[in-house]
Amino acid sequence: MSAKFVARALSFTLGKGVVALKGAKKRPWLEIVRPETQRTYLDHQLRSLRKLHDGPIDAVWDIVPTNGFYDKERLRLHGEGMWRVYELRCPHDEPLITREALDVCGIQGVAALWVDQGRFVGKYGKIGGRFKCDELVTIAEWLTDMGFDSSCHGNGERFFEVCIKHYAIKDLINEIRPHIHVSMKNKLCKYRFRM
Image 1 (cartoon, rainbow, N blue to C red):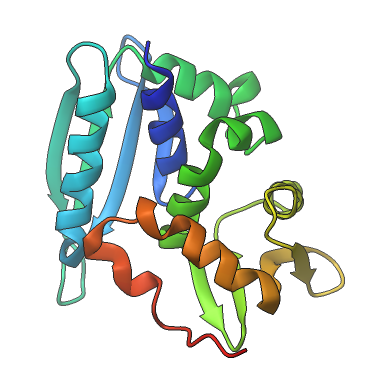
Image 2: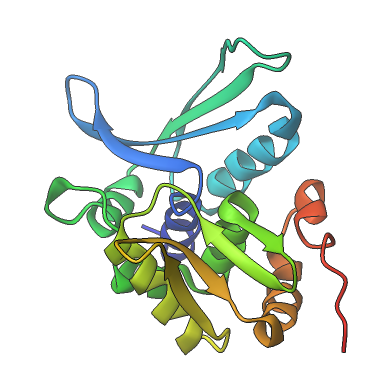
C-alpha cells in the first residue's frame, strides 16, 4: 500500500468525495460527484490515484441526470489501498474527520478542502459544507497548527463554518497553489490581496 495514495485519496474525501463500504463483499469505494463542467478535474483525480496506487483500480464512471442545464459526473473507484483510507476516514464505521486523518493528508488535504468547500468572503477565507460541529473545530485547529490562523463561526448554538483570518489567507493560497490542478485555478484568484 502506498502512503502517497492513501494521503491523496483521503484528501479527496474531505470535500466532495465519500468513502463507504459497498456491494455484497462490502469493499470500500470512493465516490466523487461533480458537475459535468468539472469533468477535467475529475479525470485528473482518477489519473492521480491510478498513478499512486500499487496494483489495479476498479473505476466506474457514469452520469447522474439533474433537473438543471448540466448533469453531474460520478466517479466510483476501488483498490486495495482504499481499506486504509476507509479506516482513517470512518473510524468505528462512521464517517468522521479526525486529526489523524488530517495529519495524513497534509497540505494536499488543505488544497482539496479549499477547492471543494472553500470560498472568499470579503478579506476572509471560509470553509463550510457537510461537516459536523466537532469536525469544524478539528479542521480549524489543524489549519491553525499548520500556520493558517483559523476559527469556527456559528450562530450561537452550533458551528457552521471555519473562518481563515485575513492575514493568513494569502499564505494559505500561496502554499496550496502548486497542489491545485490547472482546471481549478479559478478557486485561487477571486480574492485580491491588499497589503
